[in-house]
Length: 368
Image 1 (tube, rainbow, N blue to C red):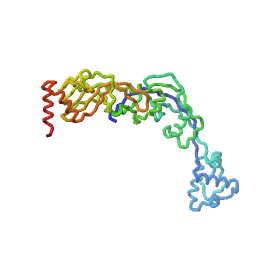
Image 2 (tube, rainbow, N blue to C red):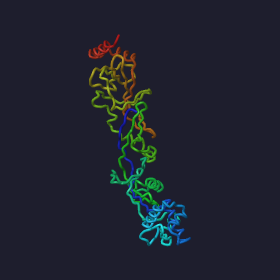
Image 3 (cartoon, rainbow, N blue to C red):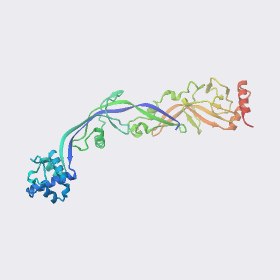
Image 4 (cartoon, rainbow, N blue to C red):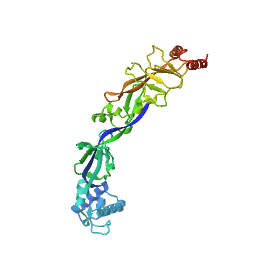
């Protein structure tokens, strides 16, 4: 990859409200369950047993009694057992304890139903993003569209259940109604896309860094031309700082070469040899390209190094999409020492003293 460019691509977004009812479940710990079963046993089998005797029957060691008494006090405070005593002791009779309705439910099912609640959140749905749902915290779209039923009930259900912390749902909350979406409104927003450009293949690709899914973009009917059409025009213009004006050619040579975006054109500051029907050079030592050469311009850095260029209208593609977009493109190839030497021989003596002096200086500088 040789270039990275950010664009702003119009894409759809859907505003909606997600809602569901839930209850908070109070689940019994292992110790909760054991104590409740102990109280239930004392009620049904022998109400005259003391707490210390019940603990022994349930294989609790005597030195665990203080912890068990504290647990009984806690269950009383939580409304799971009823006891008229101000203080529970080891010799308190089992007849003093009864399970409340919640306690019976906890004893039978392992949990009891607490408070009811309701989840209701303003949301956004981004069809092209990897993370497709977000909370709507005042998101601004650029254009409103007619409402459509876009929210898949199974997908939003999975998102809510898989992201409980995101919705600040208590870990003990149990969803007890269907998770619903409502009040859908569709709009268009500007999605940042980062495009990488491969000079070897003249191919752009959408980077995953911006959190978009290329397959989902295609599903929306967005084509390569739509995305590439949002590239800045300056990408395909030669910079003002480069003294080159091109007449872009429709004929594209079938060669292996680099495909340079015009905005990235740089010259060495040496001798420029140009086909004046395709390229005009406005400064520096320049020469006219002799007949018989197929390229449009050569940038000769010294007597051994140079590059040749073609200025063409060529189609570039977008990875993962069909078709592409025809743009101004510069093809570039390296020239070997023999090619550079031959070209310098052919322009020498034909383009004025400035060019000849430059060639002489370069050749004198070459080691013998």
